[in-house]
Amino acid sequence: MEVQLACVVEGHGDREAVPILVRRIAESLDPPALVRVLPPIRIPRGKLLKPGELERAVDLAGRQVVGGGATLIVLDSDDDCPATLGPELLKRAQDARHDVPVAVVLAKREFEAWFLAGAESLRGQRGLPNDLTAPVDPETVRGAKEWLSCHMQGGRKYTATLDQPALAEALDLALARRADSFDKCYRDITRLLTALRSTLPPSTSPSGIAPS
Image 1 (cartoon, rainbow, N blue to C red):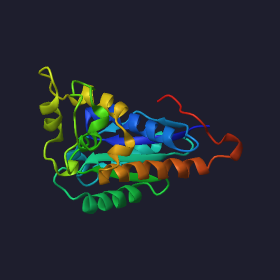
Image 2: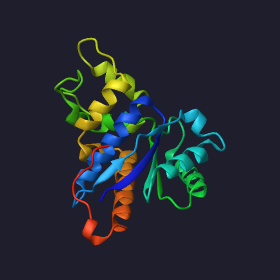
Image 3: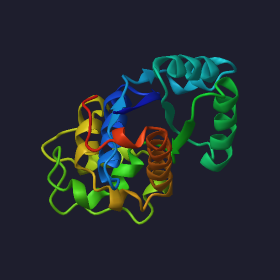
Image 4: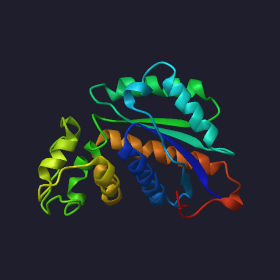
């Protein structure tokens, strides 16, 4: 039996990349978790932060998980402090749906900072060079998308809708955890999946990964 996870994201690339990360983290558990990631709900960050909008998104996500599940919210922090904004959004989400477990993950500055943290694992991918090296502090880089574009060869430029899912598939998760916000992402997803799996009858404890 699978567990269900609804997602709320802000970008078009996130709609493809976040389920890939969830699936890969589920596969890394011991034993692997069988998870169905529902098609993510995409709402632009500026709108989502407005009063009532996050709550509506969380309620919609909660109604999508039939028979139990959880909600994962993944946003860029931009110039906001994740340690301040994250708990505020988490409280709003929890108040909106007490009955559905939820996690809020804010990528420090932007999602692509996680690619910078695991840059060595992306060598040769999507036009990136074979000697690509992570910057000293990936989460302090302003313009991670631009950093990736600058390092792509053959005149390529980073395009989130095409490159973000592909790089999420290739990313070394252990290397990416050098970024504190991705480490939190990894831990939050693990926590949600572990908690959901614990509610299943022992005879249906899952092993393997369900298609999204």
